[in-house]
Length: 319
Image (tube, rainbow, N blue to C red; front, top):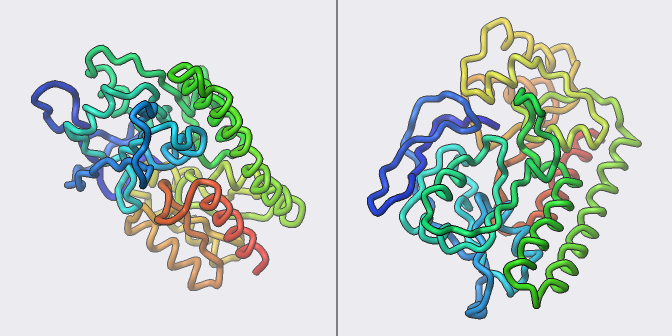
């Protein structure tokens, strides 16, 4: 997703840090005031003083880093509030300090969380090993064209990411390399169970037409063998924070009036009059709506979250 209902600032480095509003994923939007998100350290109990300091752009990547590092890491997720727009991020001095101390940094890349790179460039003497999920995915086009940067919905990418995080942690703490790699293997085993469910959906419902409000869940939808029938102009406008033309909006609403789309997958962390009308049209015509998010919901780890998303999609298709 490129935008929510607003855009947020990125705080660059220096002793005095000035807030600059960052346009998410290269999109234009109207600035709004976003809450400052205090960083959270994931381990609930004291960690060893020698724990490897890790900074992740969102709690999605923070959770994977925790799974790989266990109690041998101290993870700070810059964005962890599910109500926070990942594109409307306002960094603080404490965030900059944590980033300057990090030995490993995990970011999405692909224009999604550019504030991480900007802060890293301002961090003095930073030697952090940076793990970029889009680079790991290999999905970014060489020509710089449009692509879906929401690679955390692609389970094979997240498995490879766990291995890359393990390698990065091993450089910071060579004595614990075997532990990190063993944990990454265990994480990938759990992902395979979710991939099995995606394959089940593909086998039972492959080719079923679905609509989306924006591209956030498309990797999951593709893995399930489903067919995205959303007018590209609609999802692109929503992603860019632009107004949807009346013609395109009518075309999108018609997906439910004429029963073209059997399911709507809606990013509930974004809202606009156009997406609200589309969601209401789906409900009015008895089309199941599957909500998804960009950050971890409270009380769920990455695997539990993806499992819930796939299960919700399967239940909607069975209706």
